Length: 279
Image (tube, rainbow, N blue to C red; front, side, top):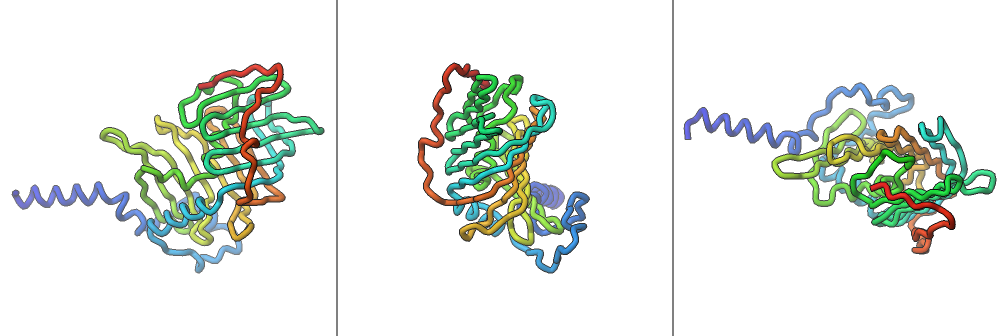
């Protein structure tokens, strides 16, 4: 092999490996790093960890969080409801993939959403309609369904994003940005992206992508509290760009890792309700 050819080949290998092997070593200025401007932030507490260490923190935190039940203040903004809607409700979550959120106002149920990990349902009593879909498949967003329960469950199980996928990390001044890629024939496409706080190791933001690389859903997590030895966000905001809808859950009376009855996540067709398949 000619020396020039060998050198060029070596440089190409280094360039291809750089995003996975070296991104954790370099911190760059980031215009969106809001913590830098937040008063009271002690930058001396910023940790320096490798990607395997950060990944282990994310996965172990997720595995230690098996169930949740809480009351919730619920806010929905969407063109479908002509602005903002507020109500009270309850949240129930159980690994893997089970979630139920019931919203009520003036002692009446205004919506009931369920996912059992395989199917999901979004029931609107006033309209007497149930939107039903399959989890983890492409869906038709050209309907009046504007919230997707399966995405909410997936966003609470962010450790599962790594299963069978490639990932690498960028290091910013106050957070780590973890990119998760799905491998296909001759290409990698973005699957998920997490922002992890470098001071307290909490996940602040999570973005999930569709197969076409457009954003499927985005979540932000705020106001972490220590509950039963586990850090739990008391405020969760989820945004769906396709339907221009944002769901905010302000959690209270939180209990984690307590057994939940399987019947909670079983769908029962309401009387006189129409079921609309949206996949």
